[in-house]
Structure formats: C-alpha cells, structure tokens
Image (cartoon, rainbow, N blue to C red; front, side, top):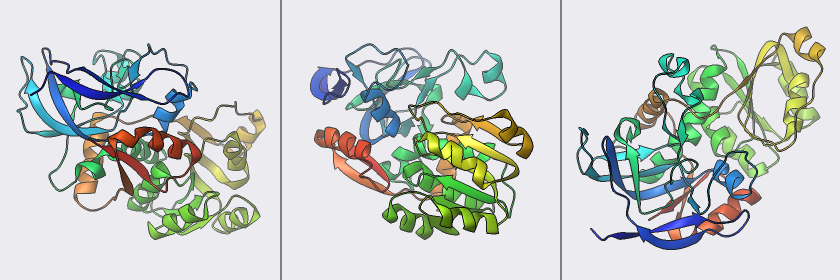
Length: 337
C-alpha cells in the first residue's frame, strides 16, 4: 500500500473542493482503516460547503459521510478482519455513557462526533473509523447502492419510525429527492397511504413509480386531494423551505405528527392555537442509530427498499456539489474512487 492518498478538501465556503495528495491515516486502538470504494454526496455536505451550518469546523477539512469500502488494516482490540466491506455514516461515534446513549438514542448524544465535521470524512481514498461504529454491508448490495442508505436512507427510516405510522394512515412527504424517495418506500412498508409533494414534475413521477398513492405540486389540487383522504396523519418534511411548515396546518388531520428533517435557513412562525386546536406534535429528526442502519441494510438486502443512484467519478465531485445545490438530481449522487 502506498503512503499517500487523494482527498477532496473543503477550504473556503462556496469554493471548489481541492483534490490533494495527503498521508494515509493509520488506525489506532479500536479502529479500522478502510479503503473507500464510493461515497454518497449528501445535501448536508452542501449546507456545510455553503457555510449554512453552525457547527465549528477547522479548515481545510474532508467532508463526506456516506462512505463504503473494504477494511485494509485494523488496530489493537479489533475483531473485524481485512477484506470486510463496511460503511461509515454521519455519526462517527458517541460517548456511550450519557442518558441518551443508554436509552438507545445515540443520535442525540451531546458528546458525539460527526464524520466530516469533528473528524475527516469519506471524500478520500482512505478513512479511519471506530470499529464499533462501522456498518456491515450485505454482499447482495453494491457499494454504490449502499452508500446513500448510510445517511439519507437511515435518516428517512428514523423519521418514518418517529411518525408512529399505522396501517391505513395518510402520510404526506414534502420534498421528493433522495430522502423523500426513501421515506415513501418506508412509509409504504408500515401500511400507509403516501402522498408526495414537490415542485419538480420528474420527481412527482418518480414518487408514483415508488408506490406513492399520488403526487402533486404544492397548491389547491394537493390540498383538496389530501382533505378528501381525511387529512394527513403524519407529515414529513425533507424540503428546505419554511413554507412547508405553514402548509402543514392546512393539510394535517387532528393529532397529526409533523417530522422536520430538512434545514431551511429562515425560522418558522406559528401561533400556539394552531398547534393546540389540532393537537399537533412537532418532532425534529436527525440521522439514525446504528441499529437503524442495520435495519435499513436488511430491508435493502431483502429487496424491500431501493436506492435511486447516479454515479460520478471522484474527480467530478465539484460537479456533484453544483448539481445537488441546484436541485439537478432525481435521486442520490455517489462518487466512485
């Protein structure tokens, strides 16, 4: 193995990532060294690149948190072996001792580390990761298909689980990009009747192909159709627009749950009476747990959920960022090393 690798470095907000040669990291105790095969490009990476987040991050930094590759070296105390194919998601590690971790809610650990935020991410030919936090990738899945499941897939799955969907529930999914497409499939597995909302006609067709009961552009037609179904029992927002939050109040059935996943720049506004009169519950949802990652991989292995993936060469990573920022991607973009 050579001593150097190529990695894409985030140096300045809104500036192209710089592909540079750098030293290959070495695994310490409890860690593995993974040779990356591919990595998904997540909209969260775009938020970081544009400086829209509030997380402290030294620059230059390596982004990317949907990486899949094979273990090539292990540190002391690791039972995994070279050659095993594993994935690295957004939550790089958590403390394991706080109340949230002990309750199985490690995503909300306040001492957690995020891949590409607190540690170097997966837009590199090699990455070191804690052995306890990597995800086994089933042999039935290609690396390209598995990549977006590590963040987009598990994020959508966790959001759907928090919605407490029952068979026959009406579920509205706002934003039919990669996460919304996964959410449709997961909500269908829970027995829901799913309605998709998006401005892009192509994504509306994709939603229906994935099993949505119907798909509409925002407006009166969508509102009428959802009211005829009795209103939405659960509403999941993957669209980074505060207007979606306002639309919730016109579409929700009494006691509906609203799950917010997207990250709009502007604040939401509402009156207390709007929540109280309908008994609406609002839940923020970010990423998912290790167990949920494993569950998503199992669902994909069994053919119950599919990834809509377009692959690009690693050298074109800046083009992937540009397209994702412009909304010019029907599903998920994955770069290959």
